[in-house]
Length: 220
Image 1 (tube, rainbow, N blue to C red):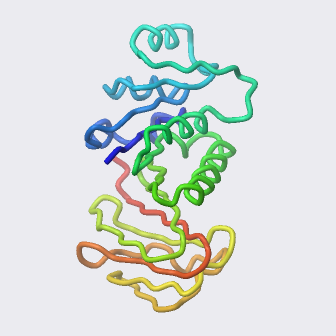
Image 2: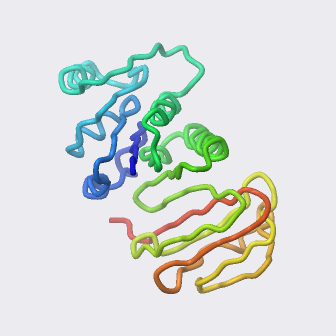
Image 3: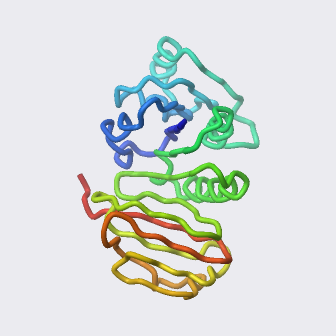
């Protein structure tokens, strides 16, 4: 199973720990612009660095050139963000999972762009699992069907939101608050902060796109 981990240029304070990153066995690591430096600072040598690198200092750019074997340098005037370029390249590895880190903090326009990009790519590539992860949250989109959710002692809390339109016929099993054939209305907060009971739970629905956010209160 191929996992591609992409580090974007978000604030270092939001980046997951190096131990978490290294837990992905045989993963491919891609640095998007300054995310390349972040990976290197976590003791991870990226397989690829991609972007226009306009956010780097001269010493940081020299460091990348000296140590990273795969570099794709793009002009600043382009249609895609550096993060989107990295995700497009990730698809060439035919991954089963794409994990995006460094993508939520800092500028809200970048965060919104990353959310919409992952939403679009999840629709285009339903066999690939796309996630955005930071120190306190894990985000992913579900399409209609049934989805197994494995318990995670760190990301204890689970919330579900309608994305774009109402989510219909929602059934939650093995959760503290279970439902049968309910609706997640666009804009509702009713499905916030649930918990798994046991080793795994499931969500199923027949229409709409569901955003799942798994969270922790642990700030360390």
